[in-house]
Each structure stands twice: as structure tokens, then as C-alpha cells.
Image (cartoon, rainbow, N blue to C red):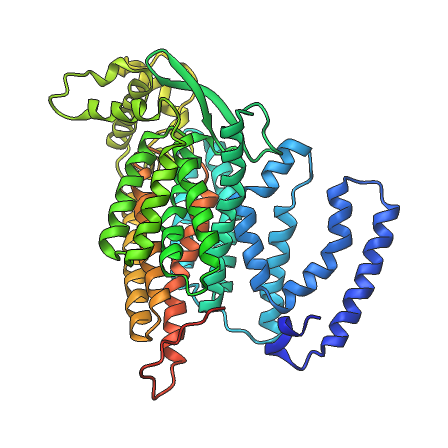
Length: 495
């Protein structure tokens, strides 16, 4: 039953593991019929022991489940829609115990944590320093509390993503997350059921589109239109790459599905910043690693179909981007959303100039915004606002130190992905070489869309950086394990 999960550790007999599962399963069923608790708690009690043992002997399944849960905000959505208890907290705690237990039981080496620990430690140190000077230390403490949880997720991902098989499966965990969310979103948009949140995974708001026109903008599992579009766009280069280069042909159907619903979701958010990111992503994917003729025809046919689903006012909203061009004759301050963004960005610049070294402290931009906005005179709203620009958010809240930290993180990230690409090429593994390129393009999409979006949902950010920082170590393990007479063999695994 579970022999395939325990193969690396054959000294654990499969019959013993099955017996333990039966015992735990029986206890779970007994508890299921006797406890008075939320149905999801009872289900977790019944299935938890079996799932826990599976993950203990093959933690990769825990990694994949973690990626899916984080990217879909599975626990948060159910908490908001069904008043369910948090599933993420106990699951993450369990994964930490699994990593520690396997280190003791199986003497597994803890590799790949060098750069994550350095960057996480530096960010934590900046947060601690901010408590000494921030106008709102409570906001800093809140930010650091959330950061500690997200840092654990990043370290789990980096620690468990150790080989090419895990890398391939993590990619598919991301794409199936996109299929799950994007399919719900597409159904919601086509049927017009915007007031149905679909268990919290498809939240939509009636928002300004252009002129006097309002329409529903899709926000997914509570990310808001811009944030949802940003992280669905991240999946587009991965889906395109798998559509073009996936060795298992039947899986290309899923890649096409993921690509279709991810692109449609980008359109349904009406996000102009994400639209610009999409243009860059498509250009880089087609230029950096052009597809074969058949794959290109399939992609173009898919594009023609997708164009039929564009919202009625989508291109009208995107056309307003021309107003930023010199000589357009348009005053961007005449539109409410542009005027608000301009005020938020100028306030961020002024905060940085007033606090250039360490900034005002994490989550303290909101605390200072209105005092700067009143001087600018562009903003009519009187509530707290965010920077709506990751770089200005870093500059205003963490100062020059934070900008240097983030710049070094990007240098290490792209240098590592380039190294991974070359290593996979040397190992004659073109499918993984193309994956390294796709991740680099995905990271470019994140950096571009971050010009128009602050770090509102850092858990996504730490998750994706945990994955990309692990990829170079995976490629080094491939070269390390190559046979001495490695030659014409591709070394590809079809998983």
C-alpha cells in the first residue's frame, strides 16, 4: 500500500506502516463519532494520523500540500466562509516536526538554507531595529509576527525541495492551484454569479472601470483584483513552459487548462499593472525560448479563443495607460484611481527622503500617509492607504538598508536561476532547463507588477522565493549525481 512512499527507507516494513495506519484510522473514526466539534475538525481527526504518517515517510507530499494551501489561501478562505478553524497553523507546525524528526531518524542533511537564512535573518534584524524608532511599534510587532510565520513556510519549502522530481511536482502543485482558483473564477465571470463567493475562493467587488462605468472585478480568495492578478500572472510562464516542454504529453492538457484560466483571470481582474506585466511575460517567453511550430500554433489558437471572453470594457480600461505617455494631452490627475496612486507614490517618496536610512518601520507607511497626503492635496480619501508600489513601500518603511537588502535578494535569485539553467543544460535535461527560464520570467512578472502593488500578501512572496532559491541547489545535486561517463543521455525524468 505505502511501499512506494517508503522505498528510500526499506528497513521500515510496509506491513508495519499499514498496521499503524489501521490503528490510527480506527482511533480517528471513534473520535469522529464521539466528539462535538466543527465537521472539518472531526475530518482532520479521522484522516490526520494517516496523512501524517504518509508525510513523515515521504515529506514531499507535505510540501505539495503546503504549496497548494498557501497559493489558494485554502485555510483562510474556509475560515471566512465556513467559520472553520485554521488548518494552516497545525499543518505547518506538523511539517516543522517532520523536518526535525527526519533529521534525527534518517540523518537527512539540511541543505539549501544558506541564502534563505541570511535574507530572513537580515529582514528580521531590520524589523527589530524599527521597533526602536517607529511611530507605531505595535504595527512593527504585528508585521514581525506575520513575518515569523511566513519565514517558517519559506524554510520548509527550501528544506524539502531537494531533487528534480520534487521540483517538477511543485510546479504542478502551483499549476493545479491555478486551475482550482482560475476555474472557479472563470465560472463565476461567465455565469455572472458575483455575489456568490464560492466558499471564499471567488470574491468580487463592484469597482470603477472607466469614466462613469462600474463593473465587477475579481479578487479570488480575498487578494483583491490587483493582488489576485499578480499571482495568477506568475503562473502564466510556468503553464506556457509546460505546454511547450512537458515530457508527459497527457499533462500538456492540464498545462493548457492552467494557462487558459490563469489568463482569463488576469483579464477579469481589470488590472492595468498586471496587463503590462503580461505583455512583458509573453514577449520574454517567445523571445527567450521560442516554442516548436506545433506548440506555437496551439498557443495562437488558444489566444484567439481567449479573446472571445474579454470583458466588454477591458480594452477601454487598458487604453487609459496611454494617458501616461508624453504628449498624450491627458492629465492623469483627472481620474480617481490615478490621482490616488499618484498621491500614495509621492507620499512614499517623501517619507523616504525624510527617513532615508532605516525608513519609518514595517507597516508604518499607513500610519504616516494622511499627514503627507494633506500636504500634497491630491487625495480626498481620509482612511489609511498603502504605497501601492513595492519599491516605494520598501524605501519608505525600511529605507536605503531595505532597498539594498531587496536588491541583493534579486541578484542572488537571478544568478541562481541562471546557474540552474546552465547546470541542467550540462546534465542534458532540457525540460528542467526550460523550467529555470520560466521561473526567471515569472520572477520578472512579479517585479514588474510590484511597481503597481505593495507587499499586501507577503506569504505568497516568501513562498515563491523559497521555491526559486531552492532550484540552484537542486541543479547542483543533479551534477553531483551524474555518472562519470555521462554523455548522450538526457537524464530526463518523466516522473
